[in-house]
Image (cartoon, rainbow, N blue to C red; front, side):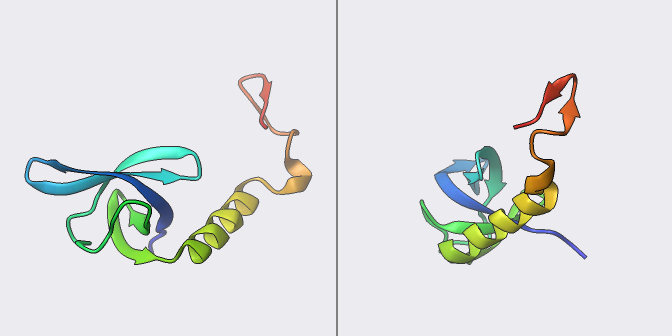
Length: 90
């Protein structure tokens, strides 16, 4: 089983002959491999697993998935109550 996270492609470039990009995952930006998705363009949402973009998805599905993951990780009733290094998490 694998977990792929949706990210918005914000940059596309070549790196050592590979089609690469940067994707925004709800505020966190990471480098991703776009080599197998020639149809992925700027502003598209892609599902990424271990740094590899697997498929292009619509914005609506990407937003639904990101919202679900946020709720899964930090439910509303726990927001502001978890502590990390002495600081309350937002």
